[in-house]
Image 1 (cartoon, rainbow, N blue to C red):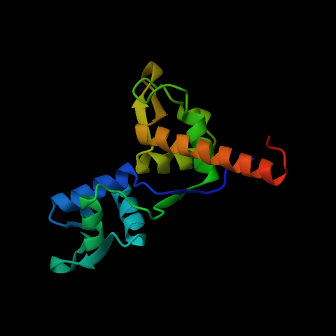
Image 2 (tube, rainbow, N blue to C red; image 1 turned 45 degrees about the vertical axis):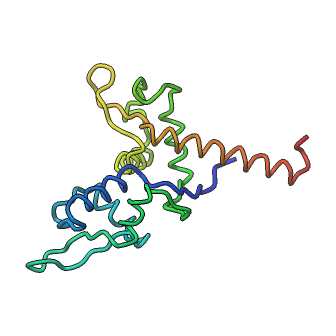
Image 3 (cartoon, helix red, strand yellow; image 1 turned 120 degrees about the vertical axis):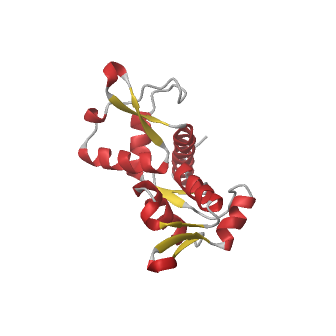
Length: 175
């Protein structure tokens, strides 16, 4: 049974890093100075009303941490809100990259063994901080799960198990 969208209530490493960067810079950074992954994290934080963009000096666009974003940082990035959803294609990639080893010992997978759609999902997962590229066998660029990616995978597996059990109860097949 395919996984349904899993509501995820933890911030991604990329979101946390951007909030930390904005805090360290006094609450605002020029959008032009943000890397692509940080811009994606900024958009996600804007949807959650934790960051916003405004015109700064010389009409330059700035990324600004809101009061809610600063309060979240002070609380240790804990929230009851859904931060994002883990999609079925992301769950598939997490399982594909899982080789059963801890992150630091993991070899991961070679990008050439992925389909085009999976490569696109992988790129997004790397930007979120759930996967990372590294030099693997023969000096090639491989992709493996980060500790945060392993945490998401464990939650996805638990979610799938709960869905299977609920379906079995519904069909009166669970003992």
